[in-house]
Amino acid sequence: MNKLLKYLGFWPPFFASGIKVRLVGLLEDEFEVSMPLRFYNKNYVGSHYGGSLYSMCDPFYMLILMEKLGKEYLVWDKAANIKFKKPGKGLVKAHFQIPDSRVEEIIKLVSIEGKTEPIFEIEVKDERGDTVAFVEKTLWVKKKNAIR
Image (cartoon, rainbow, N blue to C red; front, top):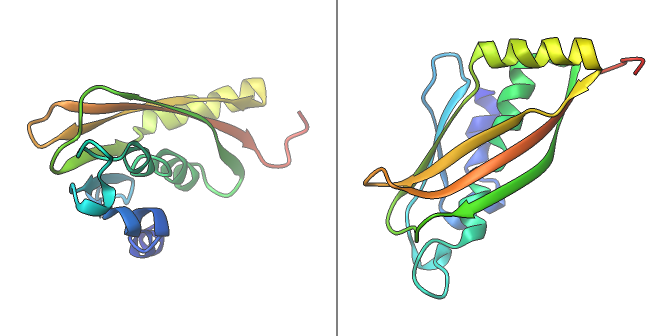
């Protein structure tokens, strides 16, 4: 994951929006993502562009879960929803982590049902700690080479 993290800052949607990724977990499974308000990521009314707010949340749950489950599982993004709570001004941040207990729950569901579609929720917060946007991500998980 660390190798991936090294290049994530150059991924065009992140680089073009000024999104920064910082590893905060010792096990390389916890991230803080931030984005300052700049002229190139503002919308018409001077707040953060909604697409950039979503971009900063897009890949992390899938990447973390892929790493935690290993190569014997398929993990895909299935759906996403973003709800804007207030205009984003200044620096905004989001914190991503999947507890081991949730990973174990996902493994159990896949073993019973053949696949699962876990939902993860994240809040994008401003410097005061107020929620700017609420993002819901649905993933699709299945064991590779499963008969079902």
